[in-house]
Amino acid sequence: MIVGLTLTVLIVMTGVMVAAWAYGLRRGNGGWTDVFWTFGTGGTLAGAALFPLDAAYAPHPRQWLVAALVALWAVRLGAYLAPRVAGHPEDPRYAQFRKDWGPAYGRNMLFVTLPQAPAAALLALSVLTAARVPAPVIGLRDVLGVAVLIAAILGEGLADAQMKAFKAAPANKGKVCDAGLWGWSRHPNYFFEWAGWLAYPMIAFDPAHPATWLSFTAAAVMFILLTRVSGIPPLEAAQLKSKGEAYRDYQRRVSAFVPLPPKAA
Image (tube, rainbow, N blue to C red; front, side, top):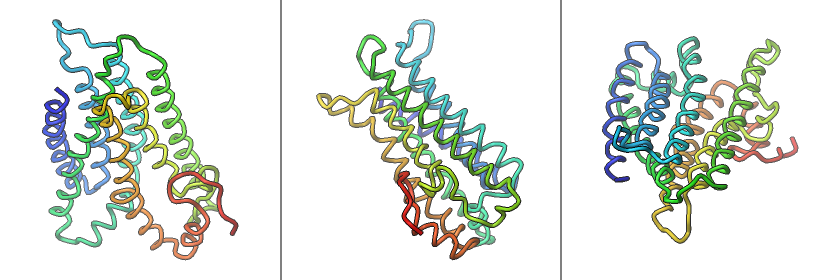
């Protein structure tokens, strides 16, 4: 059943991402890709966790729990992203794509947008593995999984709030934010975004059952995406262009991903 549901997620999310691509082109803002992916992934994975939801089948409480965790993640992140995309200039990553690609931007963006559908399908492996843990009652590991996700959401929310406060101060215009969590990690929001996906192996992983290794898929995928593909690399390239030596000094002092004590200046 997990394989079939994962393929269903892939099909649904392909449709969602085509819609995201078209809407982003129409609005002239590639950031809508992130909004569509977040809400689409959250809704699709929550539905998959509960499947089949009908009168003849009552989902296990763990299925409801896992679906709620995915929904909570999507609502928190989507509610943060949507106003930023709707009311602010285009994200530096997409703005740089638009500048670099010129007339080919529309075509190339399709190849940026579509791969996010299989990424969502890979996340489904973790969610579905956790939702179908055979233990009959909610237990300590389920509670710990909830705690991991809530801690990650709070950490990401704190990082976002600290960055917003830094940018709001006129004296900080053009400066590099190294306040609060940003003095320990150059991308603490990405770190906590990744950490939240560890909730599912917390619920599901059992060394005695090899299939439960699938619960780590989401954390592995998000780590690669955030640190090697669509997260840190393009954002740091844009920051180096705009802030130059100040950002290079920040790179020398502060960890890229995992929060660690900063090095001496």
